[in-house]
Image 1 (tube, helix red, strand yellow):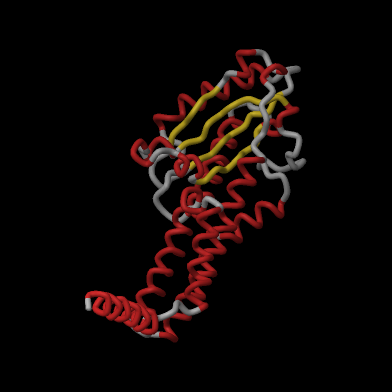
Image 2 (tube, one colour):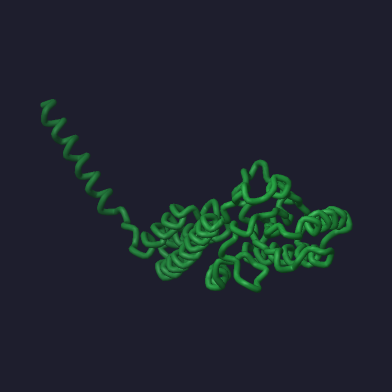
Length: 258
């Protein structure tokens, strides 16, 4: 008797599991594709290197999932398709960041005197501003004086690594860092530094994104850093261009991402 009860109980469990499986809804292909696209962009490092773009894709995926739960099929498909597009943007952004990091110049300290090889000066800017403040002009003037005294026969680049902090649109921050580099370059040239030595490397919010969020102080990234590099360190600089780009196509690709 006990055996028949046990058999009946097992049978009921199997029936219940079968019914539950039959009632469960399968994820549609569009939603699965959207989930895969977000996961793919995350695997490329977009969550860390391009957080704004990744968050947009992730938010759109959540919207698609909510619409699916509400049986709003048509709206869900549109949101899923948009998720895929945003994920591709985030993925391309992450790939571009990796390429830029890999293209960073290798500094050969041995080909410059130690004083020049270790030289570094930094000027800071106010929020969303590229004007050189009165409190920074003195520092920049001293830098121009030092560099102009070293020019002579020494062959070196004056590299301006221009930065922006994290708040705001990544493309706008990139362009802001670019403008900060330009005004710094113009100031140095106006105070005796040879124009064909000074090159700009706009960094946007790259450095701020790489920093530990708990330690980030936005003002620390509103800056232009001045360093001196031997000519051999920047072999791909475009003749006649003040910007450190390997190719024009690379810059156009970066702009297109945003």
